[in-house]
View 1 (cartoon, rainbow, N blue to C red):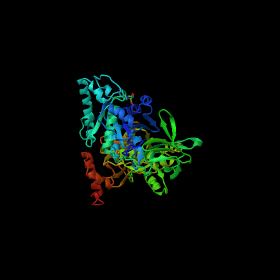
View 2 (view 1 turned 180 degrees about the horizontal axis):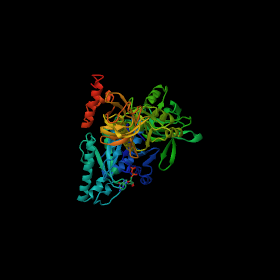
View 3 (view 1 turned 90 degrees about the vertical axis):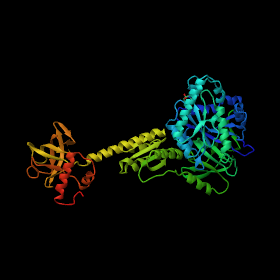
View 4 (view 1 turned 120 degrees about the vertical axis):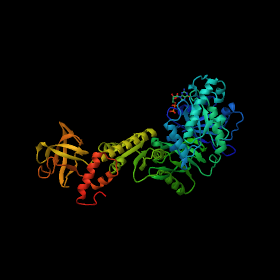
Amino acid sequence: METAKNNLREPIVCVLGHVDHGKTTLLDDIRGTTVAKKESGGITQKIGATDINKNLLEKIVKNTFRNVSIKIPGLLFIDTPGHVAFSNMRARGGALADIAILVIDINEGLMPQTIESIDILKKFKTPFIIAANKIDLIPYFISAKNKSFYEVFKIQRPEYREELDKRIYNIINQLYVHGISSDRYDRISDFTKTFAIVPVSAKLNIGIADILMVLTGLAQKFLENEIKFSDESTRGTVIEVKKEGSLGTTLDTILYQGILARGDTIALNTANGPQTTKVKAILVNSSNKGIMEKDKVSAAAGIRILITDKLDVTPGTSIIKILDNPEQAFEELTRESKPNINVSENGVTIKAEALGSLEAVAYELDQNNIKIREASIGDITKKDIINVSTLNDPLERIIIGFNVGISPDGREAMESSDIKVITGDVIYSLIEEASKWLSDKKHELEEEKKNARPVPSKFIIMPDYIFRAAKPVIVGIRVLSGRVKVGDKLITENNKYAGTIKSLRDGDVNRQFADAGMEVSCAIDGVILNRHIFPDRPIYVDIPESVAKELKNQELSDDIKETLDEIIKIKRRENQFWGF
Ligand code: GDP
């Protein structure tokens, strides 16, 4: 929080990775609440973030790595882990975090959310290090705890080292596939080209010093511009909004630039667009004194801002301190509230709880070649359901909701409509489910189309099986070629209308079609036997010219091809260019 003489602010760090790979445990280590008591305030858990100040950073890092010189005023860790939180916390259109830790279970390797995290880190161009976690589960481990990786590695047997290396190489190879060149941090000579892998055990508090050392080194070397402290303008990102009854509204905020004081005017986004309000109080959470009020704080810091205006503040929004005219800030806030998503004329509809996650879902859909028609923030409502149910293309009749609910009237509308709604809180499962639905639907539509298209076919009425002569004609037929289907229109060998197939029956079973070689009973509508159609005379399924043209270029079985040729011949007696 205090700024060093060289005028750098604390780099903001976010932890990402697949579920259960150890993000929370690693943050617990970093938060190190038990240590904090002994260190008397060395680690302070601020609201929404944990602050490791320069003194403590020096103490932890220099214990193992004597030669590291620390220039940054500390490190500020965002308490909410995960790539969704990461993408929801924005600063000037980019990511709030300056640097990230990607946690990978060393025994499991890359998993779907690891890959989503990599995608998002790449998209925001956020530098990161890899914490290869759970090294205590590798065979031959000689137990240790609360030490640096460097110290623990020294006491391990060759068998363990070999097993550890095997797993690290596995991760290096997997990362390589995703365009990332990486290596164990102590084997890297050029940190601009190679991502550092730090082996850790979050459970046994091993490797934390190494992580802090690598983060510090990277920040000092490559982030100097990003973390320059400036009090010219004051900005933060609201990460949580709580309405506190008559007291007003509190905004848990990460302040990433400048100085904020009680009484300052700030601009922020609300449900009714950008607005200004006054800072009534600033609270910070100190480890030994609980929640404390402060007159003034400087970046970077996790703070709770109390405002008394009744505003419906949008979480994830920026706060910008206003000196005179709020116009420029309002412009920026308006820009920020619009999702940066490529929508096309056709595609799926998506909803998410916040701007960042909406963009994250859109990004993953794009990676899976799924187009988006509409993207918006908030619960799924009746309006959304109605909008989607009026779409003609069956492949667009789907809503994908990430971290959102369905409003009561939305639910009601959903029950009476036939659209697909998929909701969930894991992006890759949502995408998987949506992809499956889309491909099943596509397949279904293709099948439908195929089935609806008439097949060149020929049959005869068997003279010994006449049951009814009209309304409808009911006769036994023998299919000579192709596939005769319910709904097919028929023609005679003279191109005269020969009725429509009303139903097909094989014994007691109703059928939708009958193939070449089958003998079935058949109801034919629209004609009279022995006036329009005759036993033992060929009857053909009528083929529209467009279908005939399409079929001519396709591979067909011999009997169907022959029948198609016969039909073309029949048609050409009246129109010599038919089917060309
Ligand atoms: P998150 O979902 O990524 O936040 O993962 P958690 O931190 O909740 O950890 C998931 C599980 O893995 C918990 O049961 C942890 O105790 C366990 N775990 C985390 N780190 C380690 C580790 O270094 N070694 C072992 N053996 N277990 C770990």
